[in-house]
Length: 125
Image 1 (tube, one colour):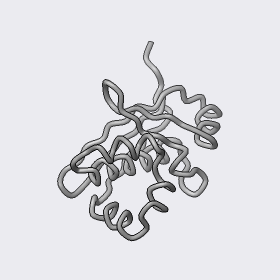
Image 2 (cartoon, one colour):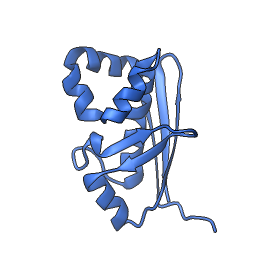
Image 3 (cartoon, helix red, strand yellow):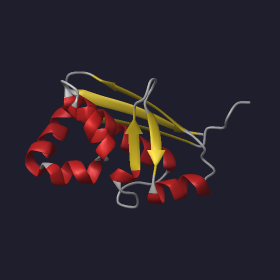
Image 4 (cartoon, helix red, strand yellow):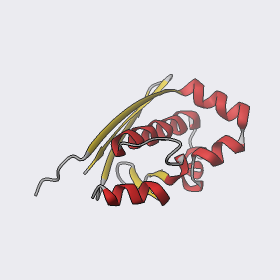
């Protein structure tokens, strides 16, 4: 059975912008935007700013796919995690309530990056 698309979002982020935010605001920025699991994953990577930017873009794409954005939902209420396959999304707090209200049962995401940009797309079903 095919699932109906209930929302779609896309975002692109300059990796330098995320690096600058990390350097300027440090832990305050990281803790406000990313979950502990996301930080642990990204900090193990050689090109951690690419991975942080990818997750930032994915969160923005999820905002758009849910039809709502910051500040209505905190960045940390959306978690992008990797297991043994493609990245997946976990929702918490208001973002989870909004998804439940809209009868969204899954969010598919794809993240890509180059040396300078990170892009992501999110599809709510």
